[in-house]
Image: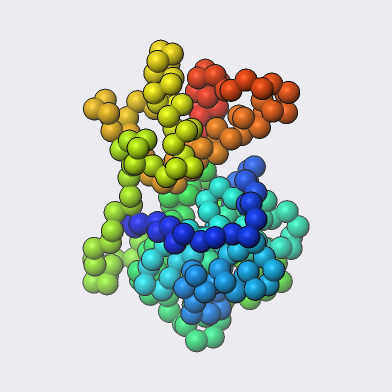
Length: 248
């Protein structure tokens, strides 16, 4: 079962901070029937940079980027520092009062997203907000234990086709913020005899948006390491390859 991750094009008030480690996923309910744009606007009205969740999942199963896969969110505090090393997923709904059953499509989207993130970050833990802080979130009717089985529900509702996740076959198709990094990992390093991203052998890279974000994050970390070492030179292809292999 495959879902799309939609980029709603949110604008943030200042530069977001890259997360340096990822140890877990914190699941929330919004305690509201708001889409990602209204949630974003509400959080900004509180003086925040923007939506505090890394992802937003609507009741119809639509998965939207919140503050983004690789950035520090604002969803669980206290305990202090939790946001710095976790991914927050906000699910539309009021699962402590009105909504007593999570729709199959929203449930399956949540399970798919958690599986997707664990593919990227490894065997990280999954907890509800209430397990980390004094709150009822994600609500008494939220199927938290079922979610942690990472098992899809099978019903007539879930047989409705869902859109496959967008895949990028070439650097030219990718977002502008990724092109220079990905160009270095393909064309530039290929000229140096050390192509890092080879694709399928026919010139197709076949990368998801989240995988591109992760690779760019590794690139930025390498650049930051060189900067701290007071080295002005660009990362070499050998350094890039070692860092990405370590990240896997």
